[in-house]
Image (tube, rainbow, N blue to C red):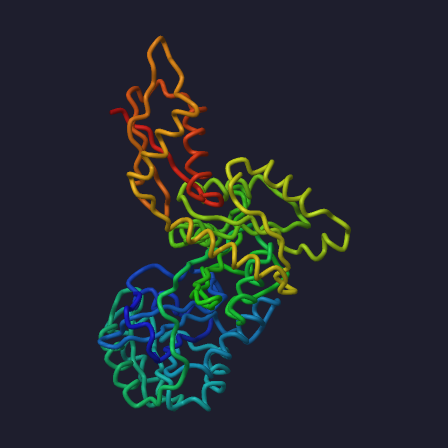
Length: 445
């Protein structure tokens, strides 16, 4: 839940624990929406997910974390565990989740890590689904935590009691931290195939390590949010999971990740379609582009890892022309080169983002549009079809972001697509809509 009071210091409530104890389920329960991906598979959550939330009568920043593992089989386990431990030190209140019926060595190892922060730990015994299981809660007091509460995140048992406990404990916390950013002026979503460099770019722009970065494709699963400022504009950036072809998406977790990535287009003002220049363009990139066009969002085709291509002597203009040829649906979209890893090309990227945002918000007065429409028809008259003259009577803008215009004509079905393109191109040329998608609807009058 977004708050209108976002420019004040808020306490951070961090949900931690080993994999599969219900952290994301509790996170979603507080938010009253399915923000974090939940699945029986252990280790689904990797990146910390942050959201403004009202718990009880108090506004907080709620943070879901990846599961802490004692035995770490791969790079992911190490990165996720490190990030979970890192979030503990930043928390004002720690919700330490344990399975009331299943205490493991990982739980006990995590408890030792929490000892220095004991005063701000609330031990939450999850999966207390029945009255009979409530007796098991007493066993957890042996670990020495003063505040212990049993809940069922899935079945909504004792959630109100947990909210009261959170509010009560936060009253005695000395809140420290930075003021939160205002509501962003510009929202950016980064889309692309796995391993194109989306998380590296998000971290570089926000000057943080919010998103886990790994050479293994598919590191990011949930949508990870970050904030930054540039030239008096406040930005929110959404780092998303890599989008693969449907045939290759075999796990439920990846299915939900991809769906969230596609849905994030709706929340964006401008989309960065990140293309790995080493791999080149694919049909999947084109399908992502179609989704962006469907929502009428601004888009920049971002050629990442250009530093490698430059060393090989590639000409940017030739590559950009090739990209435009393969993306006819995005013929208006700027093509830019960057190196997310080496932080190159960011100034041009952000300047172009601001230009696109301002174009999307531009509204043209109806009188001005219709004066221009008369001139356009005088210069290039509508064709005569079946012996009858076509007339464009009226042009009006009905929305910004997405940009939509409606042209009223005397015979809707007979107006050729070529003339519709002519009017659309004139709108772009006359009123400076050079880098954004525009919809022109034809109606009969």
